[in-house]
Length: 115
Ligand SMILES: [Cu+2]
Image 1 (cartoon, protein in one colour):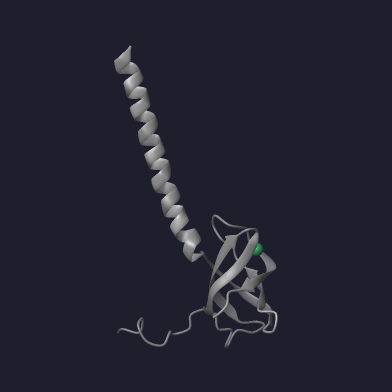
Image 2 (image 1 turned 90 degrees about the vertical axis):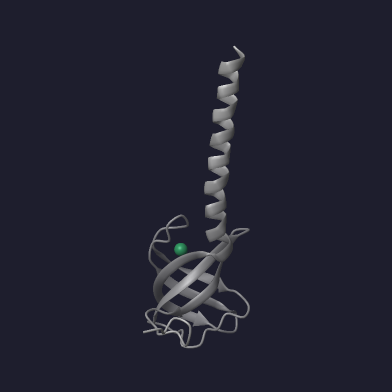
């Protein structure tokens, strides 16, 4: 039954391609980090960590308060306890690292300020 086997293989190949595409889509968001929102509980500028009471981060974790590493070069200016922030976080080798953080709803200087 060559035809039948051939179709089965084709279906499997298509399924694998679909899986690969969806993983690629997922991998894209992993590379840039997952988007999150939360309230700052504390900042340790010397250790470059930030404690966030964050909302659900779909695909990564549920809402909780935890401490994140802050990636080199990420500015913590204006980030302090009680401030609501939008951030991005990556999860690599068991370490959660904030790769971007800014005050939630802040008007960014430049690009996005079109009328
Ligand atoms: Cu968490």
